[in-house]
Length: 307
Image (cartoon, rainbow, N blue to C red; front, side):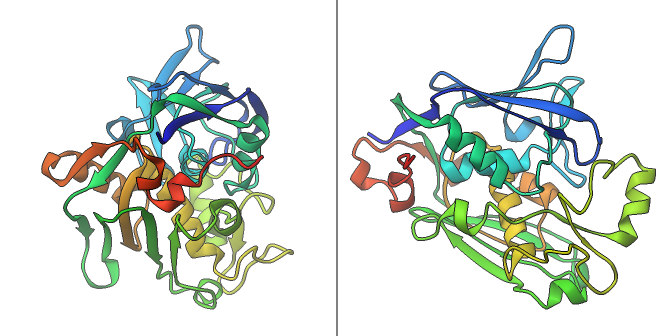
């Protein structure tokens, strides 16, 4: 049986929120089978749980925000991406502010935290959402066109194409495909950092955003070049970060997908719209388990911990 997974022990980190600039402590704790991933705001007089689900997403401007009534947690996508990449099903995320810390701007720090805590198999079958029919969402036309699509696939792969029309971005890879069965998340995707442009920073900060951003956690570009002294971590770091974000956004559906995802200029908003479209079409998917691990797609069957 392909089993659900949680952590062996708890692990902690301290950082700042990318947009809030607030100091925040985060504690990742094991959770029982069928719990899913639950954010818990422990800074409130009475702690409030915010379970991850596609319909709990209430804001997608520059990040994915989850809510339970008036209580929110912002910028969940990098941690969610690490959980997707390492196959963590059940987890409590205790947090002392309303934004997940940005750490180094990628998912690599979260991968390190999850691996240092250890991954534990649980005595319950891992449940997958299997695509039965294609589902697609589109917005805009011509130069503003964006799209995101899920298709049936016995496994999980993502293809993303970007189009920023910026010299520093255009000189790098514009399209990447990541296939869980042959590629390695921690090596190939997790280290890709979020990025931004100096021309946008002043406007964002005037709106109370990007208050915790800097060269230590964001790839920053002026009109022509990357300003970070160390340069890029991957030749195609920009588009790989979009795949990193997409993996996090899609894992908000609550279960791993058996699907092929392809996107052109998509982002948090369109990724969530895609999930909502999927959930609105019960004929397009079902939930499956694998009693025999050999029947599972290769990438998922090989997610057993190696640490």
